[in-house]
Length: 461
Image (tube, rainbow, N blue to C red; front, side, top):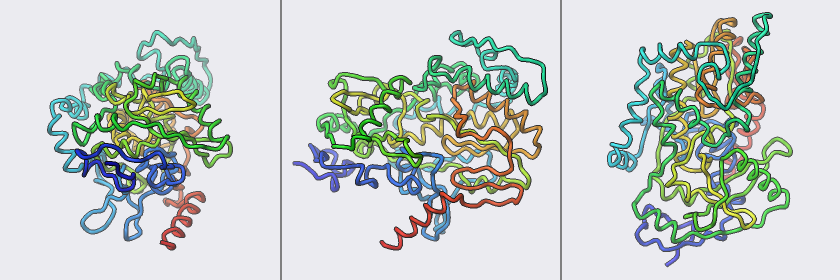
């Protein structure tokens, strides 16, 4: 028996599933099911969008919230209002998980005891020990020995700002060249730093599978097909270049077809920037066989609660953030795709898979917590976008160097182009213009246009 894709639900008919038709499914046309549609609408639910352009969820009362990831992007409480976690807490990472997922966690509790304890182990002794190594303003190589790197940088006595600029440039360049350490699974190369805060288990484990049933992998493997859709010439050309780049950065690898257990549709879509393309792997069918997991993240609502008048701010964007995390070897065969009769699989975590936002959040969280406690700065982190706030301009300039030093020591690669490293009182963050001089938040022009378009779509429904 075969099911059409629209009616097939493996969670309900898992034991009866034999095959289904998805050769006719066009994720580029059916963006809602592809999980990679209008990035301003359900960006993290898709898990494959431009995180910097994510729009907040809108609940039934028209209020902005901080949505469930991978679901409907709405976190509704009993009063019908969108929830954003404990506003007074320094960590808004409390998870709201489905009953199914809780049952799954109980079955594998032994495997996760170590990682859950790792989240709690940043005590004063650990902070004191690691801060002695990370508080230095010298480049990363002088703190943690990586034999692959030696820039031979010499610092010159000049003004304080000149010295800082030189040091920041060194920090951003020394470990960020692809020839030194590639993006794919990059954090594993910095495991010594993660051990210092007791979070190395998060890095070594990476992203694993949480099947809805023990039969799920076999069902996927039996029904593996390679549906190829005709795309435009420009799209195919762009996809080829993006694949080549991911090969160079050790994000994917080419493999024989018999090493794959599932093939996901893959294509390229244009970005808002002219001439820029984004690679999309549609994991919507694979995601049906994985447990749904919901959690709450920090967002602009949390930023509003900690913003003080006349705050100075810097913003850091992590480059290819998800790709820093490795994929468990048991999951890799299910993250396959094909292009030009060649087959590939992801070695590093990709956008689109259901658990990616949660895994990324849990991995970055101990580093953010450490920065809060050591550097003494207010922080809001939303996936790969992180904003830092402080009342004193000169203090923030000094702390900026510490922050960059810590992030690079833990292996995170910073996107200088998308970051705002010079302290300012007006910064754009998650589609909002943050103005501490006027003590107000307002939509950016781009966000306003998206909201108007969305309202027009809702009006027609």
